[in-house]
Image (cartoon, rainbow, N blue to C red; front, side, top):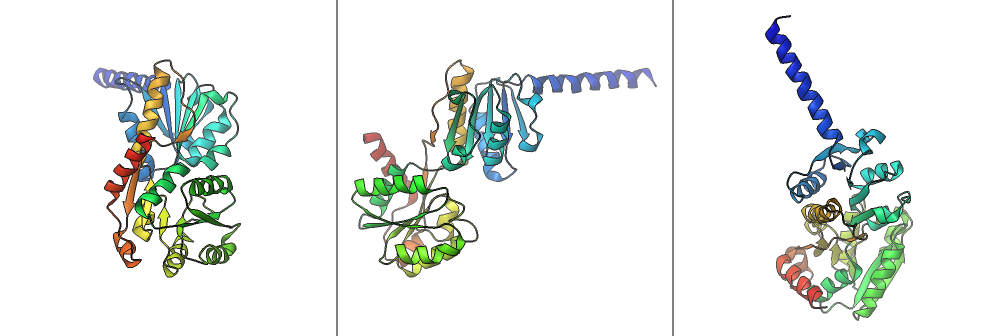
Length: 304
């Protein structure tokens, strides 16, 4: 082999080895559940929020191994699949789970040291959801709630928050898709605001159109938990963006990397509101724009 080719091969081998060492020594391991835009946006916002010079190895969850978990200061999951893979491996490093519901977090295998694990939930706080309804729909008095297999505790909290803010909660139980129609008829015996929850047994891609159409026929606005709900026909939606969740995860990471402790599991601090004015108008409801409602809701929270 010519001498120049040997030199090139040697340099390439050094580069490959150096790259492997950089990954192995990265302070932070970032594990993605899939390649969707939401997961990528969360990961990008997280990385942008880290201190300059922080080394990060990013992988998809099927590539997770015990070797990759070793010698990390922090491990971050994006999505439920990544969270479960990490929880089952029980790493000794601090862990931040993102882009999962509170119910999904509760179902993870318990950590050997709970103080070393935190999460940023997709679920919005009950008080915030009811406060938005009171701001956007001040004439509303009845709140319709559907309790599925994984949302009973959340529905209890929403009902309690509704009563505290002068609303009458009306709830029905949904164990499977077969129960959905009867449950909707029950809560819509009179017009009400239906507050959707991130329980996949109740609100999913197969049921969402039936839920929205049934609510519309009963002159009842729906409040969703993602911008897709507002686009599909919900009058309102309250949610945290992937970028907001990623930035909050980065704040937790900065604390850990500086020698501090993890914050407790909690919903996202920041949030957005989307409005479907066409649906609201057809229901005879005058709604402000989403940004105005979000600002008013933030002011109300900060004044407490």
